[in-house]
Amino acid sequence: MNATIDVGLRNRLNRIAVSLYFFIPGFVFGSWAGRIVFFKEKFNLSEEQLGFLLLALPVGSLSGLPFSGWAVKKFGSKKMVTFASIGYPLMLLLIGFSQSVTMLAISLVAFGFMGNITNISNNTQAVGVESNYGRSIMSSFHGVWSLAGFASAGVSFLMVSMALEPKIHFIMVAILVWSIMLYYNRHLLEQDINNFEHGEAAAAGKKKTGSLFTNKNIIILGLIAFGCMCCEGTMFEWSAIYFKTIVKVPENLAIIGYASFMCTMAIGRFISDGIITRYGKKAVMRVCGLLVAFGLTVAVSFPYFPTAMLGFFFVGFGVSSVVPTVYSIAGKTKNVNASVAMAAVSSIGFLGFVLGPPIIGFIAEASSLRWSFATIGLLGIMTSFLSQKIESNN
Image 1 (cartoon, rainbow, N blue to C red):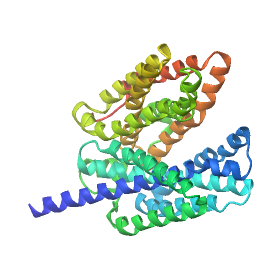
Image 2: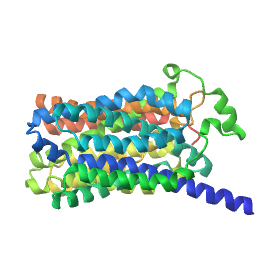
Image 3: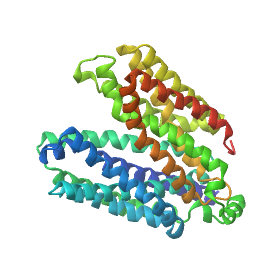
Image 4: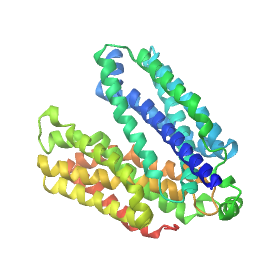
């Protein structure tokens, strides 16, 4: 009985620790996002110049993808989570103290690079904790990331209202992050799922040496991640524009579309684990894909304030569970190391996040913004279809 209690307590502490390590990157990234306007005004950047500058972030993230999977596999996710959680706020400080556009661009590349290491190492830890629980809990970790984004937005608003420069703001963020680390680092998993010495997991871990390029599961998961993150990127960057130009709401209400999406995405991530446990990952992803398609169909077919907001609500619920579930399945794919598999899936998915918004712009230029959003809806149907091709335990 005592052993059972000890195991249960250990699992809970692991879950709390990993949840907080998901909060860290969400809060750090949100802190940067909340101060972009400051840097635009500081360096007197045009919209086009700012757009080119912001490309430094995905460049850094993409450049870190090959390193992330290798490093987590070689050194273990605990060491890399620790390394990234020290380095990520440091890169934020580097941004805060940038005195030129060149320095800011270099800092953003480094910020993106470190952010990718954080992403892969955190998700590797999460897969291990989920394996110990024996049920789906991955979405809740990503839900904490979403909550951190809301929290950082509130703090950024406060910092701006107090007229504090980003470097002071970012120092406070770094101190908070490192304080969390000091206490909760000891509760991270010591071993990744590939190294667990029990049952089928240990046997599977010894076999995880296959090629990513011939693994059908990884390719399918990558395509699903691509479609979902293409939709996410589109909603992040175009939802307010859609509400202003197509729905024709006043400028101060344009953010409602984005808020609707973010709200239901966060809620969906906290409630979906129980649904996944009951109905299975493939079934939930099939429904999620259909929700994305349905939501965008409603928003495009009836471009009025209440219907467009309702449509974006459905899109948020649809998107919420897909990427966490994809990571969960990828981390347990046979014949592939967990961290390497997640790095590969993340690579393909992130391309969707980066390419989605420009594609929307090209389609909108050639036809209309409504047609471009309808095109993204097709990716929801693709997600629903491909989810049935996945090899999964449930």
